[in-house]
Amino acid sequence: MRSLGPLAATVCLATIAFASACGSSGEPAAAATGTSAAETASASSSTSGGSGGSGGSSAGKDPVPGVDAMVTAFDKTPVYFTGTDNKRIVDAPASFPATGAYSKIILHLSLDCPSGGCDPWDRLATLGVVTAKGASGDPDTVIEIERFITPYHVGATWDIDVTDLRPLLSGDLTLRGFIDTWVGPGSQYGGGWLLTAKFEMTGGIPAALPVAVMPVWTMRSAVYGDPAKPVAMSVPSQTLTLPAGTSSYALRSFITGHGQGNAGNCAEFCSKSHTLTVGTTAHAQKVWRTDCAKTAAPNQQGTYKYSRAGWCPGADVKPWILDITSDVAGGMATVAYDVEAYDNTCRPDAMSCAGCTLGSTCDYNGGNHTEPNYSVSTLLIAYR
Image 1 (cartoon, rainbow, N blue to C red):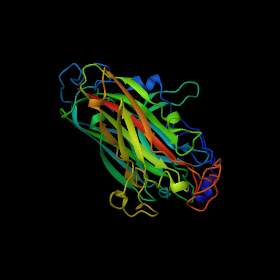
Image 2 (cartoon, helix red, strand yellow):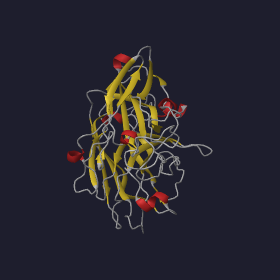
Image 3 (cartoon, rainbow, N blue to C red):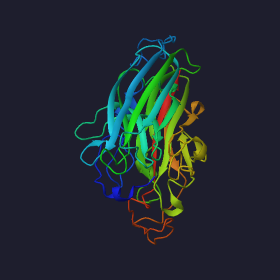
Image 4 (cartoon, rainbow, N blue to C red):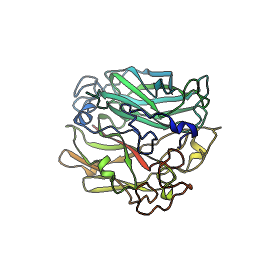
């Protein structure tokens, strides 16, 4: 994922929620919203939209199947950036059934090309629920439902199982789409994207009934390989109180690596081990995709077939699902994140510049040399 030549000089705007201010290179940094008390409390709801409402799917009541529904949040909604018109973030109201259990919820997500053509580059994109509005210039709190990467210059369609997010997808909500595009109407590089997001809900009782969705970290960017910016500073450990009446728990994490030209060509093109520690138990996993040639949207241009750190151009990001039932105790869960040690010797303040993989200097240039980072978000899902 790289800047588009002349577009590297585009003015970078500080935006809310899924887009943060520019990094030191001038390239738009990955999203970074802070964890707050609102994060922990905002989504620990039942499918009735409250902490114990009707609908038969709260921790204390027998579940009742809901009525089949199709909920449309976005329908070919334009997402673009022209310099004077910033539509990289789009919000839309969506009304989900307030009661009832659902055996299957499928997110039908698609990207189409506007009249000016699709953005020719692979861009980080997300879909989330706005759970709290920021005050006095603070960012909104947004819980990430899905992460995906746009294809090179073609459309794409995905069907994604989000059944376990039913406690979050309840009642009247504001959904937010974000695509890190820097093109739009009138640009020689394309008109951006048309975003569609529909939720197909099938009433029924799932094998494991989710009753609460609790954010551990909303989407945030952790610089990688800079001793002055430790990962734990960007993604600090969190302790959550587990809902009463629940018996099993899982973490649902999106982790993707970005930035290139650094030592080892991190973080987009380097395979590293990531660790989620729950209580005293560490769970390690490589965040690396080797199936891009088979799973990404077909007929793309560019290097979409290359393996990458947790993503492929033109593919949905697969969440890391981790059963943590045996790791929690006393009604509490403490979760920490880390990634294997790495020193980026190709950075502006390196004592001795070395290891730059794409022929650049150690200065970040917004093109073939961008700061390595991991975009991380994690939810804790509690089941009855």
